[in-house]
Image (tube, rainbow, N blue to C red):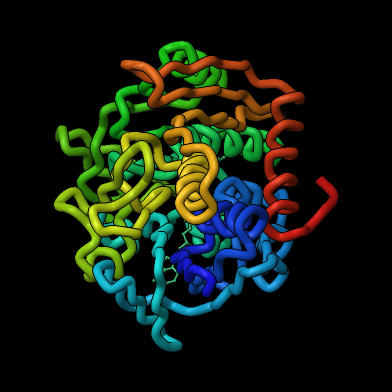
Length: 381
Ligand SMILES: Cc1cc2nc3c(=O)[nH]c(=O)nc-3n(C[C@H](O)[C@H](O)[C@H](O)COP(=O)(O)OP(=O)(O)OC[C@H]3O[C@@H](n4cnc5c(N)ncnc54)[C@H](O)[C@@H]3O)c2cc1C
């Protein structure tokens, strides 16, 4: 009898795990991959949509194109998870599993910041980025504030990328001179683990006249006066507020009792095992001591694949999750900087920085192309 592996969530983590299991353990397993959506969108594609480089239809990768041995995709919404019995209820029925992997990512909670829904716009969801695109296209000058509204959010460089791309976009449209751009964030600096990268980003923001307020927590937006109220009492006027909303674990994770007091699923940082036997969790939904990023979710999923291949197929003991990743940062003028980070191998994270270049941009395009090919069989990478 094949081992039934149920993967909840077909994002970076779920897609990578399903691909590895199909490629290396297809005869021993029966993988069911569940997601409420019919397609996947890379996080970074949302910025392309926001600034009119691509349409949402162009960046959607349909799950229907997944054709992998021993993997079945099911478009269903998960409504409860029982980690003891490894039983999952969806809007279409019940799944029983031998091994359960939770890869449900982080949800956005715009309602957690008073005034945001009435007076601001978020650009972190596909729908938000698509809706905001027209607003930015029609913007004729004034004060733009990019606000990071929680301490834990996907892709720490993304708000800076948005600022650089916004600067380029408004410059091209001839309205940059009549627009101020301010980035407000609770982070103490752009990339807290690397002064070198942080200073490079700060210098480039400065050159472009983009203001920053670091270590600044936003309490609320006032829709009447159009002002951001910071926790330290300061107020900031805005004509357009672009938000990175507060992130939370998907409600089904919390309601099913999988989240700890900090709101996320606790995992062993080496094997990604949870406290329930044969239940693993990867990616943004965990409290692993690494940033929320697709490359991290993918690396963790690959570690779980190693663990399961060893468990079910024998062979060499798997290496622990290395915490190594390459992060690409759009820095304007169609150039991309790269940071190679190792989070877990030493007493403190180590980062090596490559300044922005067209070669970095090509490497990022290649990153997307290899995943499109590996996960969806699309393209010729
Ligand atoms: C603007 C932006 C730019 C980014 N840029 C980068 C970048 O350049 N590099 C990088 O590495 N990362 C980037 N990221 C971050 C990256 O997208 C996330 O960290 C990554 O997607 C996390 O992977 P995951 O597998 O944990 O979760 P996700 O990819 O979010 O997948 C979770 C899946 O679970 C599904 N789901 C949730 N709840 C349910 C439910 N109840 N029922 C059924 N399905 C459900 C969701 O539909 C989703 O498909 C960016 C993010 C944003 C927003």
